[in-house]
Each structure stands twice: as structure tokens, then as C-alpha cells.
Amino acid sequence: MVKKYIVKLTPQERQIILTTIDSNSTPKTIRKRCNILLLADTSAGKPLTQSQIMTRCNISNVTIYHTIKSHCQKGLTHTLRKRKHQNPPRKPIVTDEDKAQIITLACSEPPKGYARWTLRMLTKRIVEQEIIPAIGRETVRKTLKKQNCDLTSKNAGASPKTTTVNS
Image (cartoon, rainbow, N blue to C red; front, side, top):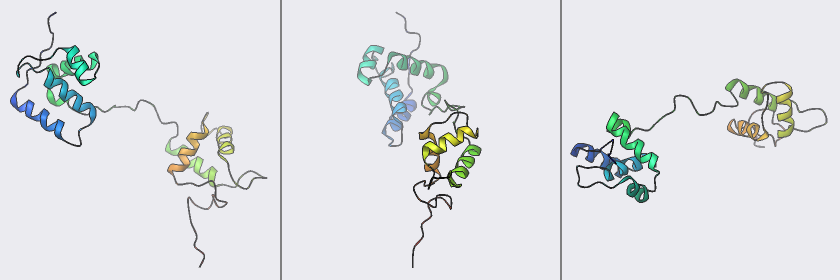
């Protein structure tokens, strides 16, 4: 079988890879790509096969193929860059506007007959008021926690996590 992509590293590229591997701030995925390129390098002698690299680095065959292909087509800097999604994989359930409405609701007076809001009551009220069409209790809890809003105190409506000291 003829290899489609062959890795030939220059001494400068090899040095860049070695310093990248040695850096403490280098992510695990970038280190794996560096190891793949070093093991597949033909300029340093006979390179390992893809199956040997796969067992040695504990990486799938596809990852090895894509790393080598990326290096041959786009260069070392492109291969070793940290990839960022242009759009996050999921849109956030709660927008900033929704957060404000949830916090306002949590800080308001609880329903008649209750001393304070519970997560179940808040979740139900959020859906009833159509702030968000469907939301789970855990999402409401996390939203309130990020804003330091405490439902356990009787003065939950006063301000998020305020403490008073009696003198």
C-alpha cells in the first residue's frame, strides 16, 4: 500500500515540536499530535507504521491519519494549533435576559402560603410565565448559583447572599 502523506520534519520543526511537548501549558491533544508527528517522521530514520503509532500512543487510526494529513497539507502551525469552534456545540438554554427574569422572580414574594421559593415552584412559574418554554430544576439551580442567589434564606428577595452582622 502506497502512503499518501509522508511526514518530513525539518530540524526547526522538530525543535518546535520538542519544546511544545516539554511545555507545561500544552494541552493533551496537542501533545498527542506532536508525538504522532515525531513517530511518523521519515527524516529521522524509518518511521513507525500507523498501527504501531496507534498502540504506542493509544490513539485511533483516524486521529493519526488526520494529523499527518493536516501537517502535509497545511503545515505545522496549523496542525499544532488549539482548535476553537466558531459556534458552540449547543446554544445556551438560558440567555442573559432570561437570567435577569429568573433572578427577579426568585427575589420576588413567594406564592401565598409559602415562606420562600423552592426550585420546583420556580421552575413551574418560569414555564407558566413563558420565560423559557421548557427548563429543568437543575438549570434553574445552576443559574441562581452562578448569580449567588440563595433561596434558603427568608430574605432571598432582598439581595443575593447578603449577610447582616448584629452589633
